[in-house]
Length: 271
Ligand SMILES: Nc1ncnc2c1ncn2[C@@H]1O[C@H](COP(=O)(O)OP(=O)(O)OP(=O)(O)O)[C@@H](O)[C@H]1O
Ligand SMILES: NC(=O)c1ccc[n+]([C@@H]2O[C@H](COP(=O)(O)O)[C@@H](O)[C@H]2O)c1
Ligand SMILES: [Zn+2]
Image (cartoon, rainbow, N blue to C red; front, side, top):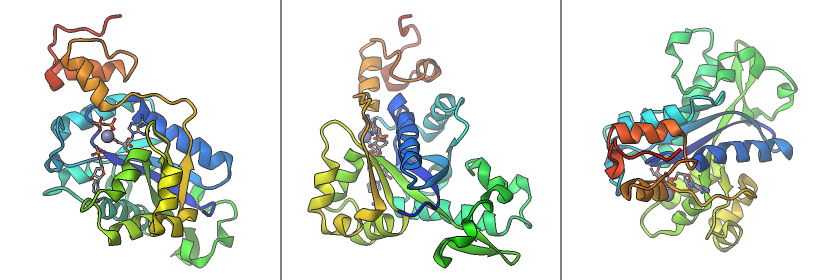
């Protein structure tokens, strides 16, 4: 992997968001930076469309509201509602490509787009093209560069950030097309965070496609593992038990107010 500019994009249900969804971004960014593998200039959470139809998937409006609460202190992780605004479910390849295209189009047309047109998920650094153009980007190979008023601007790659279980879902028959996987792994790249019960290194080794592109797959070991999942939070809420310290207090308050996942507003996350 080159040291190019990278935006990490996580797709999923986020029903509800947990602390691990957010930690995934921090762990991945630190890992890529500490090894000089990439310059992470932003993060995007892309919640899936309601039509995805997964069990306990509450309306996108609620999932987005909870993500906003969970991410209110983040300076670099943004939420994109683009997938949820489409007519139906969008394949991940299409979503990665869309976000990457918009970022790079914004970079190359900076002089003709005023700030009002910038989507709210656009990384802050993209808004300042001068920052983007600093350093040694002039030495990057041509395929990483685009031209801006005669100057070379480094293209941004949007990589898929996921947990090891999502990687392993690549092997579920009929779930992902070979062509999409080839594009996602070959052109965008994957950053995979370890998760209990998964062995991503072995999974990559046993897949010819992933093995071929292994230089574009970064495995990040989460040494501060936490078994929290949306399923766990939904279960606790349904049972009237405390989910405090597994996600942001404001997320818990929101799901109680809106009686999501079988919550009743009288329940409290005992303080
Ligand atoms: N504890 C975790 N460790 C590593 N990755 C995680 C963890 N929890 C979620 N992820 C990742 O977050 C992304 C979004 O996943 P998702 O919305 O399915 O969350 P979840 O907590 O697994 O929810 P659910 O229990 O409903 O499946 C996926 O890439 C998933 O692998
Ligand atoms: N073919 C595809 O592009 C494909 C297949 C299955 C899941 N996905 C995505 O992976 C994510 C999975 O989320 P969950 O882990 O919550 O089921 C969703 O964002 C979904 O859109 C994509
Ligand atoms: Zn999951």
